[in-house]
Image (cartoon, rainbow, N blue to C red; front, top):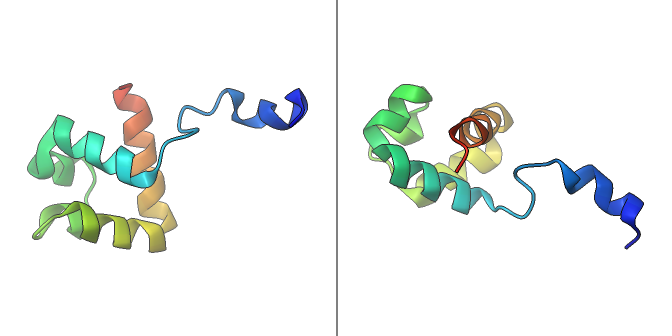
Length: 76
C-alpha cells in the first residue's frame, strides 16, 4: 500500500480495534451497570454479556456509534 492509502486511517483512533475489544475494554473500565447508564441501550442493561452486546451493536449503527464515541472519549 502506498502512503496515500494509509492516510485516512492515520488519525482514526479506532484503527485496528475490533468491536469486541472496544466493548470488552469499556465493560472492564465502567462495568455493565455504569455502561448502561452512560449508553441507554438494553444490551447493557438487561442480562448483559459481550456476546449479546456484539450481536446488537453489529446490527445497530447508531448504537455502535455511541459505543465507539464513548471509547474515544474514555481515551484508553
